[in-house]
Image 1 (tube, one colour):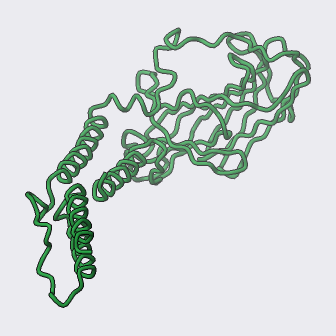
Image 2: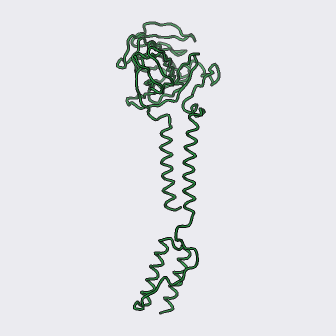
Image 3: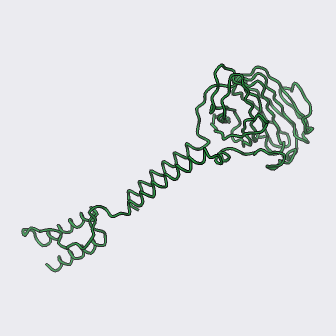
Length: 333
């Protein structure tokens, strides 16, 4: 492959790589404005329907300022590093889950900031309900299990409810500090509840959990997608590709890159200007009578080599003429 073709392909691949990075959901978006949670609930459910711990964030945010928070502003949450995100969604007026593509940013210290772009303007005092669900490995092992759960607020919260649900067949379940309220959840599991007022991003909430359980078998089977869950459980970026406003620009960009590559390859197939188009005399040019036969032969070889480098003859013609010059040199001896 010619040098120009290699260079063209390298440039196209670089542009394609940059475009993929730009279109990727993991590209950092600009963050502006702020939200405030009037009510926020965190449910922590170890070994609920998975050997890992299920965590659910849900709450009503409002715009506390006097200016409208514009569409595409980020809303962010902090989750454990390595967590598997199931749903990251806005809650619609009908109560459905409109899940969004999200970005992640490693904050260090086993923390990741997850963010998505708000899809509509939020007027002052207007509500914005949000929902986030993920699984993570809390690092505990049977039979005497222990782990620390820490909630890191990213916005001011007027009222925070933290619920920790004990797995089925767990015994000696203890939280430190002790829960303010205990009871049963909708599935009959023991629930330990905490309530906090007027939380800020500086007010982390930490609870230590200890219990005894001889195995890692979850309390319930995980529901299959579509079973009692009409919304998609793993929306993310792929769902956005079905939207014309996202898919069409991507396809157009790829088509343009393919066209540039095609034209570049065809251009390199055309003969170079001044290229050899017919037989070339074995005598490259006049030779001074003062030169010896050997010197004349060497001069013709250099001129022949230069013609090859300049693209005036091809390799086969070069070899043919070189052989004739060598034959003449042997004849003159």
